[in-house]
Length: 103
Image (cartoon, rainbow, N blue to C red; front, top):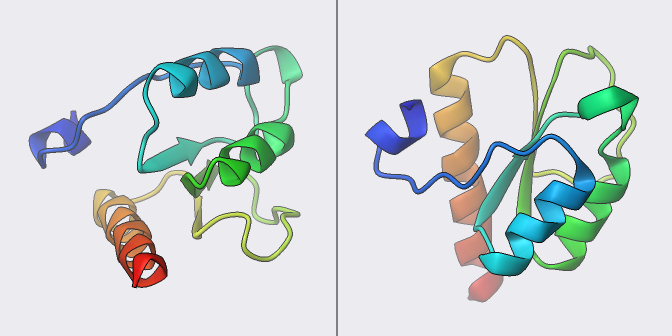
């Protein structure tokens, strides 16, 4: 509701890599907010790679203090619980990086 209240279109949530890729095949988002832990112990590292391959900006939202991601895989990594302001700022950063890459 936070994002919709600010004018964003939100697709999801989804709980697995397969569900996320199915959703992305129907409509490509500008940004994906991804948790490291998905349903039934699935980790999202493969999902992050696949989203990045499609040019989708990624914000990682995780309960882990230390996340092992290669540089550039995510625009921002936020630790849960993330403040609303931090999430909004990270999405703005994604939009800004998208504009800079298009220039």
